[in-house]
Amino acid sequence: MAGATPSWVDYLASLQWDGDDGAGRRELSAEDALSLALKGDLTAEEAVSLSLPGELNSADELLPLGIRIGLTAEELLLVQLLAYFDRRGEDPELRQWMDVKRAPGSPFFLFMMKASAKSAQVSWWKKKKFHFSPERPGYTAALRIARLGADGLHLEQAGEDGQPGALCYHIDGGYLTLRRPKGVVFNEGSDVPQTEVALIRRLPRGDGISITSRVRGLGVRLGDILFMLPCCAATVALSFEEKSFTVPTGFTEEPLYARVGLNFVDITVPIENLIKKLYSMYEQEEQGNKATLQQLQNKGDHQDRAELMYCREDEERERGELERQRKEQEKEKLENLQRRRAERNKYKEMRKEVKRMIGNFKLGAKIDEGFLQQESTGNSVFRIFELDEGTGSGAVSKTQRE
Image (tube, rainbow, N blue to C red; front, top):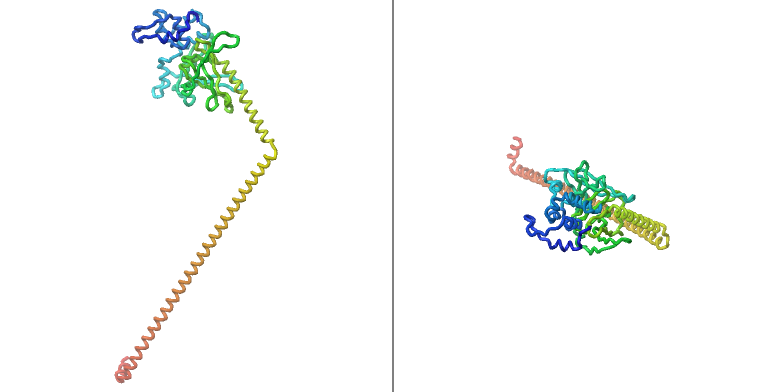
């Protein structure tokens, strides 16, 4: 961009201003403020605040300024994202939609990136929601998205009938610990320096890929949808339609590059090319797995047969051992049953013998009692007889009375 100097980051670090009264503020020309915004160093509100009085009065003036100074198409798209859809500072409407405890406000269309692994076609799924609900565990934040208008230049609300659209994202804390220098590269046949601005990686479960920003305020375009990743490590996800497809474990990451000084990247073609590459890797892995399985199935050498026979013999031994244990257990149960029956019969005989002995004892006691009674009666008669013989008349008179 004309008029931009290479030391804006150092210059920005030297800026000191009071947000309330503007005292001590270092002011920039409108072009310089816009240049810093395109590099991700300033938001639209900060660019307006730092510009010279009268040059930029609101974010709405950024697009006319960009057209007037001859920005490229990508730069103009990024300017619109900054001016109308980048709400890093304040977005009450989006915040109310995300807060489930508050009464529903304006509904949003929640978008989700989808792709077919076979055809490498990317599409956008959307659903109207009155409250925010994450599409994927952990992706609990949301950002506004825009749709490219029919003229191919102006941006509009992504939802239907002018309603706003949103996309889930999260901050990848693991990525923050794995930062590395971005460096500068040159495409073959081009002298325009490029730097790494984002990273595509495999999702942990392999059901999709993620796009993680490496810079602050990265404008991203995928098809006719545009959005801004607000900070470094901000991550969005793309899922695959085919449930049977998983991203090969051999894929680790792939960088995305943008022109130095412009935090904007169109990922439509890179994503489609990457999906073709991933599906090719997936088919190669599947063919390799099938070939390995076929080799194992067709392998008939002596070692495999011996192992198979050994396994069968081992199974036979195990079955024989189990059968022997079962028979021993049944035999032991039968012996225990017979022993208990013999003991019960023995106890029955003993009880019968005891009862018989008790019966005999009672019978003998009765016989002895009768004999004693008989003997006692005989002695009494004998004494009476003796008395009668001794008295004579007394005996006769008694007999007579009787």
